[in-house]
Length: 379
Image 1 (cartoon, one colour):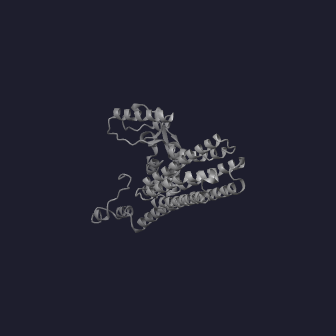
Image 2 (cartoon, rainbow, N blue to C red):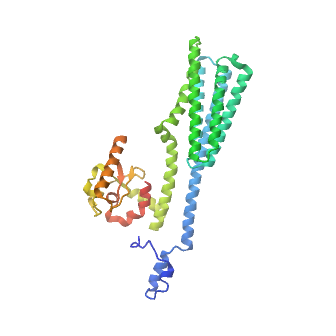
Image 3 (cartoon, rainbow, N blue to C red):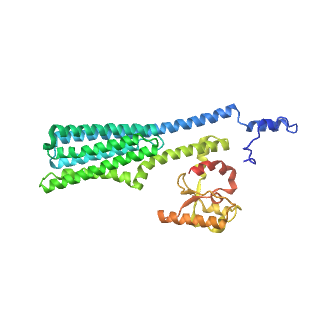
């Protein structure tokens, strides 16, 4: 960095030096950030913070809006089912299924509304869940009080659901009392899973009892099972949970890291963020570990042939950024790298694509590639 003139001495170090020419003094002074330069940095940082806040708001608004749509669809389906079709016929089965899908979708949308680092919106979501669950508890309690078990399967179902709703409210209340965002969201999803599993159990038992009693409309109970099973699957399956909720998390983290990386790279290269990002996108490379031999990483002597093995990829398409020291033992370093490679191949069924400085930096254009390093690391 010192060789490239990116590290500057303070003005007090050379103002009294009689050997410096006027041209040298101007060069030193221009490398020291002045008020205008600092103000520009501050504007870039403020713009980045505003962009992140806007991203959080957009995700929250989109998910809450989807929740409202699904909530309205569920109310309409329940109203149609209760007034026009009751508990009989295949039309009631279809409406039961649609109502369950709406309940599943609104739970997932609302659960995904707050990003993982957002305690305020997480608490808002928990309060909404508490209000909705409390309202459902009141409706079921009113149904049991007004008609009792004489209302057939509907009355029995409401009586069975009452303790489930009470348990859900307790779990959501515990989640709301947590200080950690991660803990709040974990308990929130646990409450949704427990509620869904108990609802599945109730539906299966009621359906089996109605079948045993020869009820021709017993199938209505089973049509609510698949939507509740989806909630359990999303919350408990690591792949699906990471694919749904993790998608938003990655979008936030990537924007945060890439935004910071672009800012650092822009400051290093004295260019705009847009220019640096475009250049990094065009010059980002990675290499399959299977193409490397132990001798390739045994020393730090430049080897342009290694760069020819690397290939250009989009930012984010690299599996790992390999950080290492040339002072480490080459044999041990290679052994550790191969052990990681074996685990990756076993888990993913393919060779890892990695970024390694000796292979993925163009030795003939280091002045171009080095300012892009912060963005390469975020990719």
